[in-house]
Image (cartoon, rainbow over all chains, first blue to last red; front, side, top):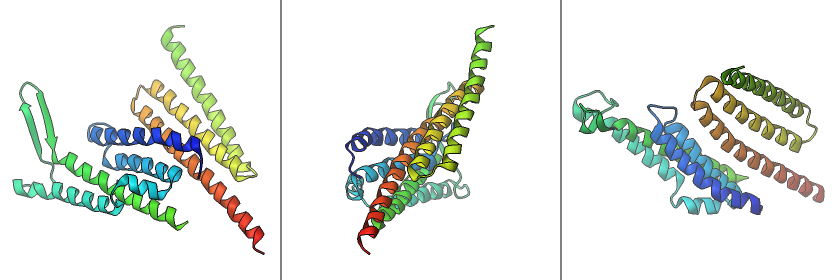
Length: 139
Length: 101
């Protein structure tokens, strides 16, 4: 589709969608959000770009094949699950680590749950994009 | 009438009117003789439901409804763009078919 309005509008919307997808990813676990919805919103940004500017440009903007992103995400999620085995817990048990003083409440919790969510994000992002790009190129 | 009562009355009126507009858009979606009519009706339904989410966020004091509205607005834009391109391609295909035989 060759529309200047859509192309200029998309340029603003893609950045907005990607920032919002990261926001959704990091906000998950305690509030609505998480890896799955974040990955979907991020994928929508690139789908919009593919519709406005063509699949080739979208693939160039992604820099790497979407299949590779999905595979990397699967690896990250598996790593986060297997990590629990090293602490003597069953597989895929969340491991928590707190930076700072826990008693005063002034601490930053870091968990393997977030790493797993990032893996889910990458899997959803990559697989949806590889599906849509394949469909776009087939038509 | 206190300000709280006035707010809840306004929100309830808003919800009622939004529901009417969704029903009208659905009628156009059902009847719409051509594809562009249906696409515009779907787009209007999306916008009305975004407004509904905003009003529901005020009524139930739930911030999560605003996220629903935001995502719906972004996805609705994508749906409209994709359907517009589908309509364009369908027209091109029809023209090709006319030329060939």
